[in-house]
Length: 210
Ligand code: 13P
Image 1 (cartoon, rainbow, N blue to C red):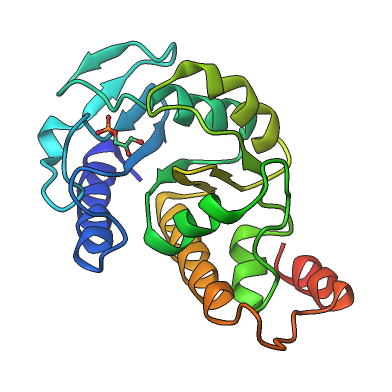
Image 2 (cartoon, rainbow, N blue to C red; image 1 turned 90 degrees about the vertical axis):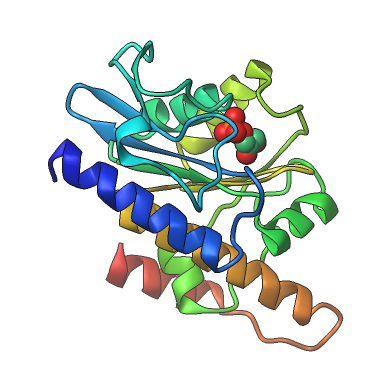
């Protein structure tokens, strides 16, 4: 997809996330890989009101070259996109239920949400590492995210929220939505005798759908 179309798609998907409550205020940020660099949402912007022409553009060395000042979480997106050459986009949200799990879960845990449904497994995968808390914009978490993202499509930042990658922007958004809804299910079912998918069922999904 050409840059102009990607800009429009980013604005449209971000607005959709905002309108459905996956992001509030100016929380969250999105990046997309381009042949000559990266598009990023500007810092302090609402995902509900982005302007395609004012999206931040960074060159291949991650230097800001046009548009508004990029998100303070550039390093977070760089950590994932450099660890996962096959990923075309990264979505970071503070979506309520995934963030609730990130407040509950022990740091270091790799499966804080059980594999309750096929689409969670298909979109997010087997591992969802929980990484230690850092304040937003703290570059000290880049290395940890980079290492975790080598083997995980998504990570949870403790007390902060999810960082989710996808092959395309649509994939990354769909995975972020699936993660949020799975977190909601996991919290709804806490203390109830829910059946998780078995390891064999998880293997079958990953083998069949990649
Ligand atoms: P930015 O407004 O700088 O993108 O930061 C928002 C955010 O989600 C911080 O984690």
